[in-house]
Image (tube, rainbow, N blue to C red; front, top):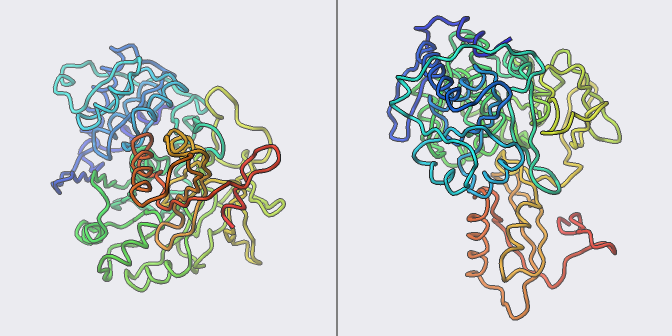
Length: 475
């Protein structure tokens, strides 16, 4: 069953699909008919370039109608969409391409330089492209539930990021969380603020909204707390999905008054404390409902709409999902989840129960409470950051003899990246060196991964076999 075919046949051409806002603040409504036509032409051009069913189409684009049309074009011809964050450096793109071998890249003039510097061995289509008006309209490929459709990279605790492969069922499976977490209703205006390239962005930016007959907001601009609040009020947003860090920053840096048209506010991606839930309710008039999921699993637990809020809780399992706690760690029965992944690129998903790596407690009513991670992933402002990626970037600096990276608590971002560094001989610590090290990381990998805290030590704590003792660094 082809997801693009189902969407465009379910909605009339004149119905609003997107409310797009560009960086200059200009707004326009994009209909389903326009998205269908644009996606058909992009898909036709991709087919001319030799892209077909099962091939991977990488996107390096901000949240825009062209990005949405590009992703839908991939779904249309049975290709696999791989959104990448626009902060990715050429080395990040080259690494991902070496893992998945994309057949084509969709990008914009703003990010075409990054793609060119990555020296990928596949064609690039820069959007918008006026010549697409003459491209053939592609038809719809036959797609089975377990055919690969969506691919996203996630940070691992060791080694390079891993490519998570989802089947077509993942797209349709978003209807569960769209109803029982987001609470999307027909005619709603839905805004998920996650940047294009993250799993939460595609599934909640437009897929979940469209499955429930709603219109999605796409906004290609840097985060500004006051602008965010003003837009929510001015646009009449009904459903809002932001990272906890964004809620914290809005509450601290913007003037928030009652938002009478905002019915549903949800958060995910990092721990959400009760104080932020209470503060958002007091300011906006809506309760903030936390949810939990992973790139591999999709949504697992939610605080459901219409139920008494449990500030600080990650909620209960979605209807039909079976979870259990073993040795303090939350596990999921993958056979009960409509959005569980097919596997990592080149490998099937692990057999048996899925260990999330998250330590939780369960109360007498079945609500789960997050207590920490069982691994070393750093959750900062909704981003999952693998420490080894940052360590590799810092280790390439001539002033660094040894380095360890951990997360440190932060009142706004939840955690920030902290680098503990042993300097090379004849190198003295200084504020200028710290700035140079931070800039060095920003140049070698996505800037959000840079260490906001840098400490210098004489020696790192390691085991007799040489393994870094991150727990000692955090302590």
